[in-house]
Length: 415
Image (cartoon, rainbow, N blue to C red):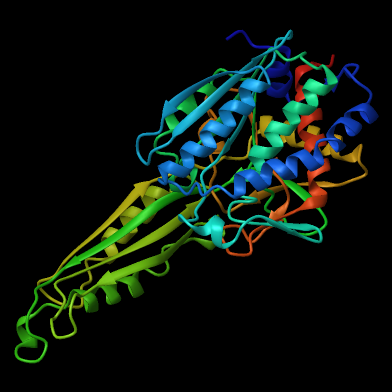
């Protein structure tokens, strides 16, 4: 794709803007009109169970989102996310400009079937609650109603807006990550709508995310009768416990690398010496070279065994990569901060320990697209029964997204 003026400006980190398509007050009025409709959309979405792999619920949300995008004039295509089920929706809106901008978020949640009935959407004072209300159905709603605001304003100075809703982010986006990589390579900028990860009065966007790897530790021993002949067994649980204690310090605080063991399984009956035991761990990192260090150190450590004649194996599987610090993301964050100041609000640019699909949209070997994360609603307690978003973040977040699209459609390189 021929580099647009936007891409060139972000590549050099130099941005100025030309006259806006509408006065800022007109933009603010347009997004204010979207607050109540957004909350209604959010209620509808939250009250549909769409946990990763729950195809019935995912299909209901897919149908709803397809209808909403088509009503906005988008051409919608679907792509199967085969690993866990459901489809990735790709909607394209054609404009009259040059810039290619992608808006992206997932519509699956971590919550199981029946959760929405148990804990339906509700608003208490300034907080809206419900399964997935922040992570990330709030982001879905922000995208839809920012597009509604642009339509109200009659704004179409972008070249193409591409909207991506995927159904499998909470399990690593195995069925959608290749599509995200492909589509993002065609863009000048990618805005990702996970919720903000900064609780309190100051909102945030995310400029750096950690990568995720998955650690596996497996022990094979020998079973025997726990009372009659325990000496004939080789206790896999005991060996696993020994290895976990040895492996507890694989992280590196100086590099902010962590490896936490989170799942342990072993044994079948109380009167049988366990033949097998296993554990799984969660590794987070900024520095990609940490993969080799952790793998090699762990393999050396497990050579020291407590129980003879047991087999111990350590594996480290690569998951979602990090979104590293880069000048294009920094430039987008600075532009977002400037827009927030129009509302007399401050916007932090933060680094987070979580991993997101923003990492799949980032291309280290290219200056495009510029990627910015966490344009969803502000809230907290994600993945818990108390997950919430702040109602008073709706208008600022709609304003931010709408103005970002307008500015990115209208950006020039300064002299």
